[in-house]
Image (cartoon, rainbow, N blue to C red; front, top):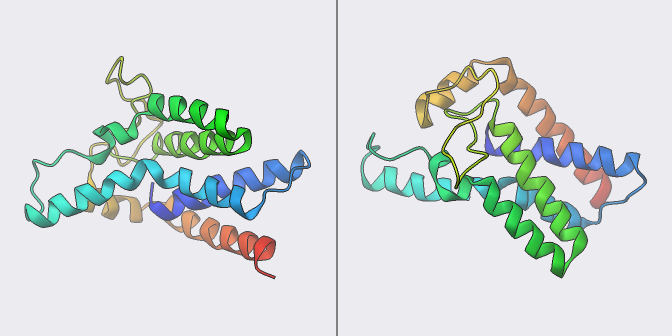
Amino acid sequence: MTFQAHLAYPYIISTVVAKTIGIQLSLVDSIVLLVSSVIPDLDYIFVWLKDRINKFSAEIPDHHTWITHTPFYYLILSVIITFISLSTGILFFIGTFLHFIMDMFYTGDGVRWLRPFSNKEFYVNNPTRGKYRKVWLEAYQKLPIWRIDFVFLVIALIIFVNEYIK
């Protein structure tokens, strides 16, 4: 999934669920959720830098194989954060785990849910499986989900502006 999609879907889902159960997310809550929903992809900065240094070498592994895409570590981190702040820990967990759920659908390889115990990749009907970086993006942009992502990003921005910018 794209960076924009990882921001939009978790934000919309969490906002709708919070409103449904009568909880008002503060601006700080929303920022925690937004940041945590993209944290697993921050490793992509290193992939991007290595690509620039190595002139797009095919030897660079996909960033989903890196430790930053290991749900187990985010579970541990979420528990630790929960001891400091219950709501922050819960929102951090929701953001990161929605990221991984989304990665099961439209990534080159899926999610290694059992890592560090197993490297088995889990994915759901993934038409972009086996494609990485530029080739993945080209394939992804041909799918209907690419346009749907844009619509949901606009919806997320409207909700955010409506909630916090008055």
